[in-house]
Length: 488
Figure 1 (spheres, rainbow, N blue to C red):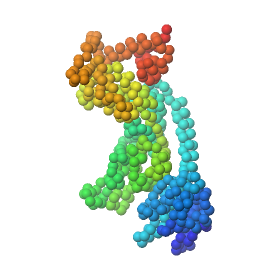
Figure 2 (cartoon, one colour; figure 1 turned 180 degrees about the horizontal axis):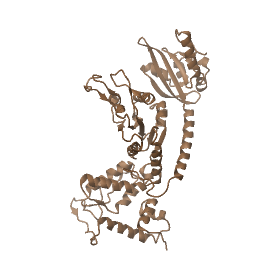
Figure 3 (tube, rainbow, N blue to C red; figure 1 turned 135 degrees about the horizontal axis):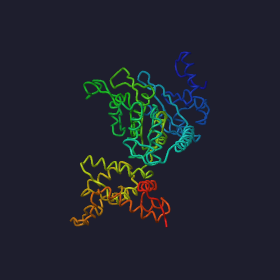
Figure 4 (cartoon, rainbow, N blue to C red; figure 1 turned 90 degrees about the vertical axis):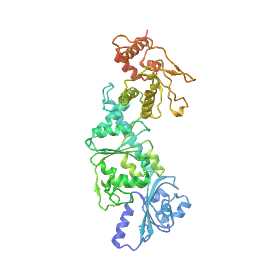
């Protein structure tokens, strides 16, 4: 075996250690407190471009100086005295994730154990998984209908094809306890879909514990997540406290912004996932926990792993069922339902019966909504509150980064203000027919527009472009009013 004598091991202990090193799948190094390399696993030679004999006759300082280890994770442990994980480039041009852990004896650092994994293999696995995922989605698409009522989900507005596929995938995996990784931009609705996944699951009667990892200070994270015993630290509650992990027992734990989880907490979370148990601060006994884990992030976790900011082993544990929620600009068919639901919510919240002017829909459908569903809901709330009367106009409130004004421009059905601040009363709206409601009048107006334009456009795509809405929305509206295209 190509290694130096590591210490005063008994023969059996030496045999155990030799077997561990020889059979290690990772690239294993054992280093002493001075940086001298005592032992390496066979796989290390190919990755670092040196024989095991050469590696065991040098130091990590020399390897870092020669560019073989760039940088050395063992030297990071020697500098900080703590475990470390980083992205490493080798002299052979490979990119590996390396982690190292200190071993203390009688209060002094005596050994460092490091292991690394070649990211080339990881990328191949990711490519294979992506191919399987595309094939699965293609199979799922063939089984999904195109009717508007194909997927009715209480509490969610799902009208676009892509979101029906997402919902059907979640409904299928809900019966299992597989970890789900929600991916997508901020505000796309990851929390809403995580709640729905919980409702569909066998744990639906249990607790749904929603944790925003970015909102808890790192100094409080462990006590909040794992709980504590009475007197565990200064200021601890007299009766102690069950942590969020315990509170999720029998239910679902949703960790939002998982990419912001501190590295130290990543290690502790990984242990809970692997062992199914945790220990409160100040306690000596472990407690069993059983929960369904759902996590979400708007970051590229694979890139975070490469940057050394996220543990590779935790990434593998979380990336079981990845589900990507597309941004609102890629599923504009959902905007109508989301807006109608938000309007109902606002009417209940503020005690009104407001409706939206027909012209507002072109504004809603044409905006890219960089903040997604959250931005749409906030936009509508501002429009509701700024409307003078029972009809919400069409405010021009573009996203902050577009540079456009965020001041509402009130349409003909509301009151405008001139630059001097005096109010200009808009023209009186045309009176409604006897017994006619505002909603039915607007529906009739929509029907008249579509009926007239149906004689001028050969396709629903061309009509959608002219109206400033999506093609599926045009199809639904034509069907609702019983209109067919009949170009002359």
